[in-house]
Length: 142
Image (tube, rainbow, N blue to C red):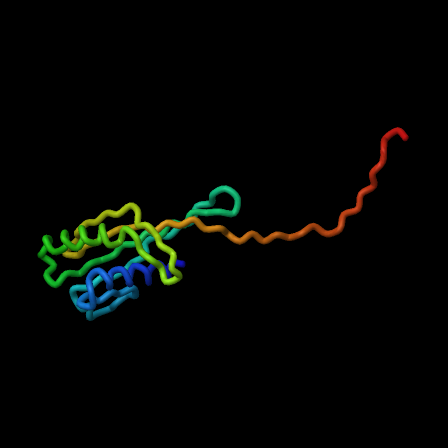
């Protein structure tokens, strides 16, 4: 499911910003074409709920590398646009996810936009039926 969420984010970024912005989801050693986005998965976790359900938390850090790393105004404008654009994404299967815990900061000339896409999942339960059971039923006095 994590790869589908990454694809959904990529599709939404491409629709919002166009083909002039490269979108990376794999580590790039050298040669980033700026301006660009880099989608980074932080620390996914799953928390059990009642029964076989669980909530899967998927936090992301979307890096934005501007053409000019000293232009904070451009990064603030992109951050505000990301707040609006990434509020909802559609994954390739057609499901829509809501972005939560949105925040951003600028560190060393790079915009870091944080967003979570949480979803409730049902974990498959392996059910092993009992073998045959025989009982001897009777009364105590009689």
